[in-house]
Length: 393
Picture 1 (tube, one colour):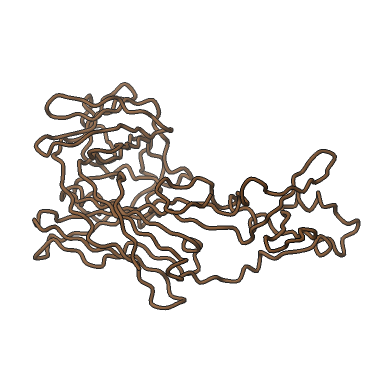
Picture 2: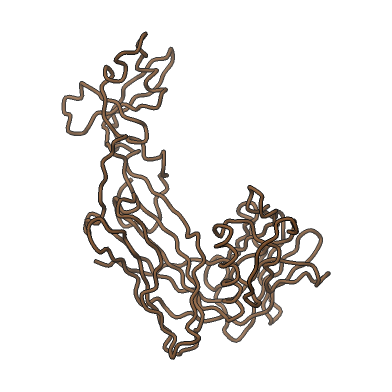
């Protein structure tokens, strides 16, 4: 069963130049070069990322550039409001609709210099036709594919990124919990006003690969069954409810070449979070010194998106492995053979949590389990996505 709907998001980085074989020489890498990444798109919050390059053998991926002034310029002479730096190196500008007959660029002022990307017309992106999952058998992995086409045959180059959100729950739902109080004592309490608040959690994760495809050599702009993502059927992603939001963008040829080059480089070095080599130049120039190297690419493109839900309660595709680590133990089982025996307070401090299962109506004999088997916040958060379709808390 397929669950599909639309959503809005923003994509990153671009480049122009030729695809050449490249082997990075770490000893010759220049550091401190400005990196500017972002996509100007309409009716959304446009996000730019500013940083400085670090050595390719550095543990850090980059050094965020703080305190910059960032604006979007239009060739009619107008400019956007100044971007807000929402976190170190991340600059956000709410922007309205783009005019297909006008050109746009980004202006960045930092370190006493002004940097500007090339003025570009917006590129129109066709919608994603289908986004679906496939699983060959019960223990096979879950594969996610998409298909798209451009009836006008104008879009020749495509790029995709995605964001995953999934809901999972702890192994055990308990009606009671223990609280450490003074004098190394525990107090046992019941969840009165709501069910166990640590049973359901959520995780959000962005894609970590660059995915680009060209239809330039095909008779029509059509991509069928492109593999977007795959994961094992035992993955906690699909324990309850899973969602993938795919962002599609049509690229200009120079943008496509930038991403292909970056894709090749980063496949050799790691992921998109690896340090960027200083040779990865783009369409951004320093106005005071055009010879200064700048890494990154700012393009102008409308984005189309599609969202797919996979509900394990309906599809039954999750293959539940045994939770060998998540046993339930009595206090006596945990302390048997230990002299002197630890107190229940000691057991709590060692990472165990008090459990009384909902079906235990007497609620007299509490058990113990590792915290991660009772408390979902060990691996997730209570930040539920705004678009989530159920009422779990």
